Image (tube, rainbow, N blue to C red; front, side, top):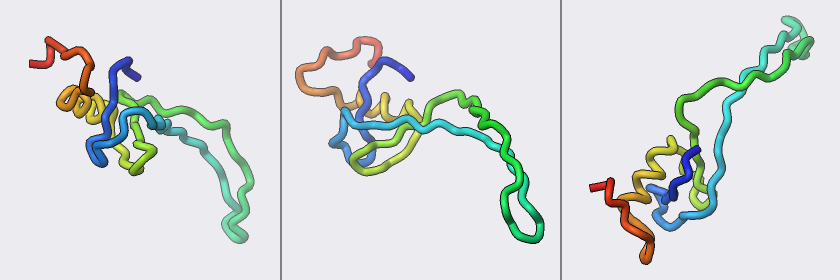
Length: 86
């Protein structure tokens, strides 16, 4: 995750409450007749090029850059302006 401000592009009110969503794969085997789980493997984290972020105000979920770019487009009043953005 980047050390940059976020701003929810959906509700446009949240700048502080977020969660990061991780993806895991876990193999398992089921009994064909009863459907009971017979065996579980250890969970393996899937590699992802960019974290998935969820807004904890409106539950919008998107890639991290959407939240970062929205914060760059609408900087917080009083925050320093990013000279590299223009």
